[in-house]
Length: 81
Image (cartoon, rainbow, N blue to C red; front, side, top):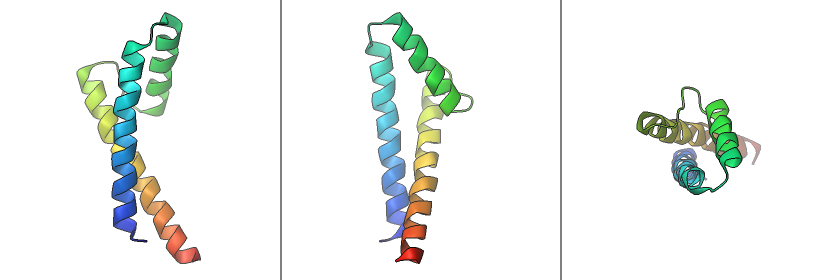
């Protein structure tokens, strides 16, 4: 298992899931659910807002989170194995 490949894979996956999550948040019909969704994203991603800049920042932060978590997972897996 290569640390770099796992890190990049999880980073890209996390960023793609963030995009899907944003689209779901825009298209959900319930105002209460939209408000909850926005608050959850604001707590999860520092500096996030429901704007184009916030969307881009969220993608970048998602990729970085995935990169770090994937890298740590693969590194620890290799050491334990």
